[in-house]
Image (cartoon, rainbow, N blue to C red; front, top):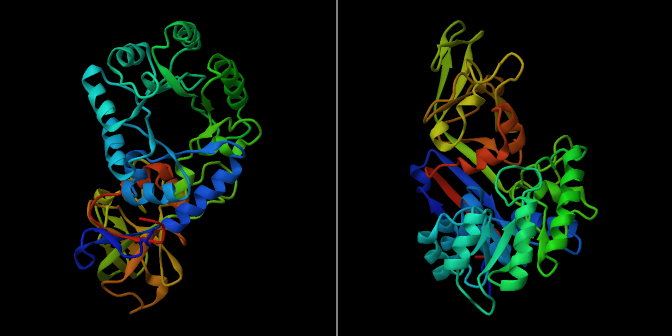
Length: 390
């Protein structure tokens, strides 16, 4: 039996919080179903690293489990341990592998599968891994062009020969990671796909996995036996230059702390940006300490040329309102002049990103990507989960 998550409230109490997050678990579930459909015959896993991209691993993981996800990927063993407490029966893979024999115990205790990325990982797992009905279950990561983590093809080839004789480990998944799938025309996609076919041929008894979110949209034979969506689950755009088909999952809003009028020629915020007209300002109670990046500022930020890349916007009362001056640690200012006098009030909320302000647009204004905005969300928000399964 499942309950709706409409009653789940976490984080700071609403009357005390400077901002709030509304996390739509039904949208998350719909995104998973869409990605599962795009994955064709491949099983669709879920990447829930970094506290489910900042949205909270427990409600996110339970919702995805209810939709049929059975394999999950995290980055670190501590994340895997937290997920195991939420999903006792899930298959949990740890992408960053083993940090040495002292870490092996947590894999045994929490029944985690390391993704083996190096000879060091392999040696440690052979010596200190655990047995189930199969000896030392794991995944293997072979690099095909990312040059980040992963075995070389030559080392994978040698491992396949060795393990065929010894049976020391049991690869459940062989995987690689696409470096440029967000650009479907990039020649590296075809090159990596071709390289991965050679890898798959070495480990035919386990599932193959190449596709992240963007890789799923490449279609064709790319999905293999297992896909691993991340950002698309959470509503971010996976592919550049096309309309994002995913539903937004999180809405971030900032509470107005004060409304004030600045006279033409006066300055505003750090650095003293000058306003050209009498300006009504909504002073909002979140800033870069809450993951709303300083680089999204409306003026005087050296990380971005404001003359070519304007700052971010907020949304209130059906209108986009420009960010004014620099984002500060705890406060952000929006120009609400166009809404008219007495249109906004203390205690109301300005949407930072969500259904009306697409997160990828806000990220672009900040010179970053949606991943960074999501995973930067701080602990000072009031969080309200709606829909889904708990």
